[in-house]
Length: 261
Length: 220
Image (tube, rainbow over all chains, first blue to last red; front, side, top):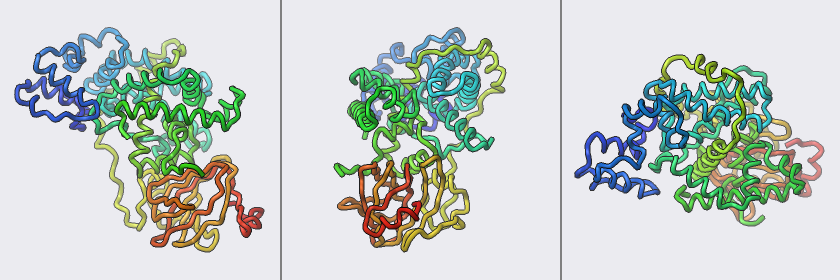
């Protein structure tokens, strides 16, 4: 039932959840090891399976029939839904699930590319390429490694790196994975990354407005320090140290929250 | 130098996770990630931040019919991906090169055009982007690189062997980040030659009594 990358990750809770659905609990739950840094994640699964009530976990969305009913209509917008939509694309080539993802992410991908300085037509075309890649690579999406948004962000980022390289070298060949960050995010930690995304949002809210703004600028305006320095009239060294401080704080908060060192 | 870190600074990892580094620096960071699980985790964490920021981005209007155009381009059902990443050929050339660097160097590592820079130091230029230059350096045991400072930052990643800089030791997988304020003199440890991957943002300046004379002649 779990297909694609999630199937290869034995510690992915989705796998555990689905195993529980297929082979209902009794002894299984009691023996289950608590895995991952958010140990309560498995605790929750165990509790839910014992009571037989699957309704507050998002688990029900994983059964094919439910999925067809729920996703063949409209994008409901929640991040967990995006992961489920991607899985529907991977497992059954669900074009309506893809359309829902497109409606949500394509305008954001285009805006990301525009803010990084792409011309409008280039941004439009790259957005198309990114979304086609989302379709083609859907089977490699693993909800335990990345949230849907992070996974799509990484595709957009890599397409942009390739496009910049094509511009500079004049070479027509596309992809050079050596220049892509290839972080196996939280691969072995057995945590659904949609939960991790909620923690990132909370940690961002914990930063001062100025720190969050530094991070957003570095993200959206590419040329990090130099450009920020010019726009904010702050000396380059100040920008550098403030950004570094903001990122270190964000990282430490997240590490304390379970993104382990 | 205060609190020397053996990891890449957060702003560098974040810029890498955002795809905002130039190719020489990006290749060095990819290589660092191959060797250092801490760097991998941190980049993963910053990618998750990237996902959240993408989610937050305001929506740009798409061309009319963009969705239909995209649906037309999709083709058949996506195929499950084949087994992940080939392990790569076992190194038969005597180098234990991390996968990212091996991909960048191509298959014939033995035939690369190393050149001698000074006694005990050889270099292999890799790539250039504006002022940023990536190179491999092979430093014979016990050899000291001339004392130098930087106009820009210098990133040094140790691939083999180790070197000392003051009271700090840098071994395989360690990354030393030296910004413009650092004036240093790395010395290769005894043992096998020290193989480093170095990216400089601007030409370095020799600051020792001998090196100073070389500045006008050596572009290193």
